[in-house]
Length: 72
Image (cartoon, rainbow, N blue to C red; front, side, top):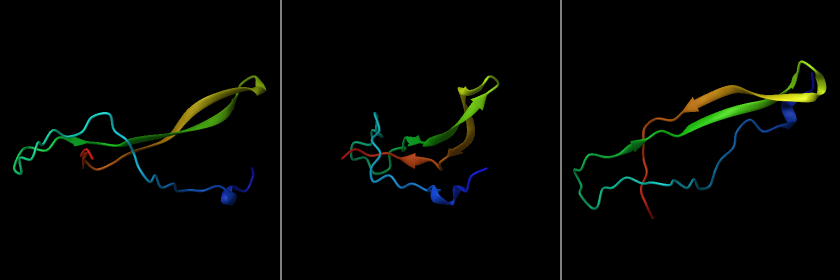
């Protein structure tokens, strides 16, 4: 097994773009629409037929705390 210390274990995104945002429209006490960010991590693993046979396997999943997503 190779030394994995050369690979990053964290990544920071400067910006994440969402297709929909919370519809608050200036109402301070309006019920907030909450979203969760879900990140799945997949690894490319060799299949049963050898070197040229690869499959993707999900090895981790993280779900964020509820987030309020606002437009610009």
